[in-house]
Image (cartoon, rainbow, N blue to C red):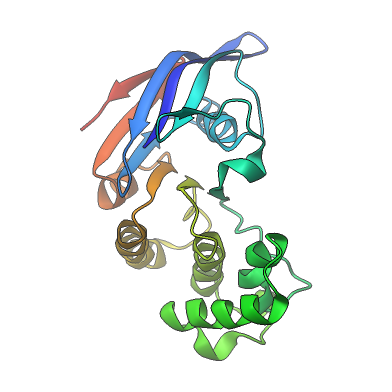
Length: 214
């Protein structure tokens, strides 16, 4: 279980988080909604260990991980721009996390090919990522996030760059794959319809505090 306990964070004169607490269970998808600039992405960065909170703590499975560096936390963070590496082919983009964990390159590539097959991209392993469609690139990004078996998945507006029809089809696919992987998942979005399509629970960040939506 991923837990935020009494998190506070201020930026300039804005209170992004004020004594904020939230729990996300294993296999659960929780949607975090709110307008642009409300602090949603900052909260993800605090969870990932990329930015410190002024007060409060981050816990996982009963352990205080507030002082742990990002690489020790074992979380995966997916951005809205996919953040794929244009100089690597599709297979090596997916394998990247394993190679960073010092898995042998051959083994990492074999596992990457297995993931690509699972995501319907078996024939694209040697393609450059910029030759893929937006939906295919998003699948590559999710495969790369899941290949390291992260303990939690943090999604930052993952579908905002896609057209409405593609967003709808990928939302259901992502929900199924994330649930099957059994990870605690926090989805940041400003789109309530998208949030309801993917998440079993939704909260809104308003002036640094969370409001339960469903």
